[in-house]
Length: 256
Length: 316
Ligand SMILES: Cc1cc2nc3c(=O)[nH]c(=O)nc-3n(C[C@H](O)[C@H](O)[C@H](O)COP(=O)(O)OP(=O)(O)OC[C@H]3O[C@@H](n4cnc5c(N)ncnc54)[C@H](O)[C@@H]3O)c2cc1C
Image (cartoon, rainbow over all chains, first blue to last red; front, side):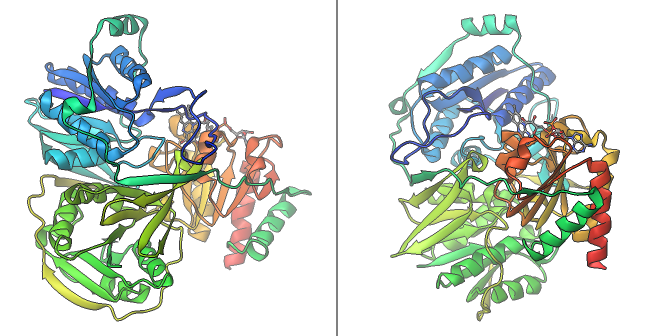
């Protein structure tokens, strides 16, 4: 079982977003980069699946610029066996999906794990698009993964509408995208970080994969939302404040 | 333009977001054909689509479409739409799940979770949040059909009733390789966070899962959903499905009441587009007050029960 984990390097959640002068994107010069948190769940789940199946490999794969290799190093330090870096600075998620599909074909992947979405673009497109390109079944917002002992079948729990879960059975090969709550990702240990330095990162260029960038979407006009202004703090005795709040919500804001 | 909206439904009812998409196209003077995938009695759904403004409704019927599945929806929608000359294909919240696969079949891109869209001179442009709403951008489609999903709750679902002529077509959902083996329903029937008009959220300060009941009691009075900060979720006071924020749900209700939530940047990212924000916090310096329209500096264990009582009076 060769488990491929798609990971994306994204700005830290603490990042204060600044927009480029021409509104074509965000300033990235002093951004701190992290592995997208949902992808960390996917890495952890892959390591657990490998331990359960007692066989196979875990490969972390990313499509991104040079700096994205740091995300792969994090994955390797957590315990992934190998890494693949498609060095490609593309903003098109369809190009990314195509690259992942080609890598997984070339490297004989048997299952793909990923986060349910990356926390920068919030789209949740890449894993599903990849699944369709490979003609594999896919399930997202997964909060539990259980492989059959032979690794041929897998049962997952999918969150539906937040209030219900579906237990879904699939056969491998397939694509599984994780949500929060599935596990608590391990931290990279010092020996893990040392070992990661010796592990190989295979590099592909888009042309190695027979791909070229032909964006299907055009992004423009990035904008910060209007700053919310602080409103009013009510005053007086608490019961009177509560009564005034309800009155204002009804008469002034008209929301109840 | 030839616009198709893939409707979403559950338990025989149209999801409001589908009516929102259809009605918004109508407001922009655009005719819409709605697709309903399913089997059995779908009349309540087609009726509501006509009310929202769908001029034509195609029911794609197949026993395998009785329950939603990613592949079933993508396959059946593609089989039908590929010969229809669709220029725009839109859907609502659940679309985020099947639209990428449908887009791959068409070989086009897809923009998920948009907060507005507009048609001008035969071109569709959408606007959507990035970084959980810390900023937003416009997206144009360079290859037809243009495909996007609309976030629930961002436009009105009130449309101008249209003919809604129903045509039934036998669907071809193909092989659905994911089998639902069991449905694990949660005990309480809860209002879905992303669709709620009012949300009452609690933070670490609730101190236990049990204490969340004071929020549930208040929520019940006004039909609100209950949310939580990550600190509350990580402490085990609330399930992660209730988490609001950059690594939880992004919500935009009419009213968001934050109880004992400090207002960290990751939490704000998930709720800053709420129309009105109320903060209840005992620390007058808590950052949440910088974003709140109304604030009460006080102990939530005192304020929330009073609020519940006050709302009860109102609802009489
Ligand atoms: C990668 C990453 C992702 C994250 N994603 C999210 C996310 O999606 N959502 C999210 O919410 N957070 C997220 N966080 C966490 C975030 O940074 C904060 O830690 C979290 O939001 C704090 O939750 P809180 O406000 O409940 O707790 P605290 O920050 O501890 O605040 C508690 C507040 O309650 C007040 N209080 C205490 N007792 C009372 C009382 N009796 N009555 C009234 N007020 C009281 C205090 O004054 C304080 O303001 C993320 C962090 C990271 C690093």
